[in-house]
Amino acid sequence: MAKKCIICNEQEAVYKIKDTFDYYCVECAEENFADLTILVKVEEEAQRLKEYLEKKKMNGEVDENDDIQGD
Image 1 (spheres, one colour):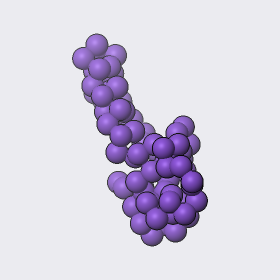
Image 2 (cartoon, helix red, strand yellow):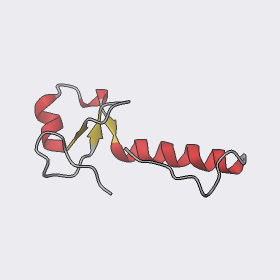
Image 3 (cartoon, one colour):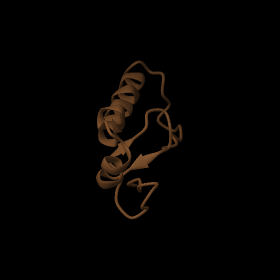
Image 4 (cartoon, rainbow, N blue to C red):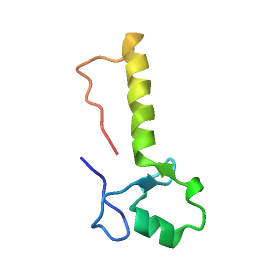
């Protein structure tokens, strides 16, 4: 499920503030942040989570029946 921008609540979020639930679309991020490099791309964050879970699964640390909650 795609996250929505917390400002306009209309567009799909592309950026987020690291370790928060604050998601922003491109337009709102550009309007509200002078430096977009301080934000994390949602896609990159999702990829890191996927890689982490795959690593845990390979090590037998994740039960396939576990319910993993998203943001």
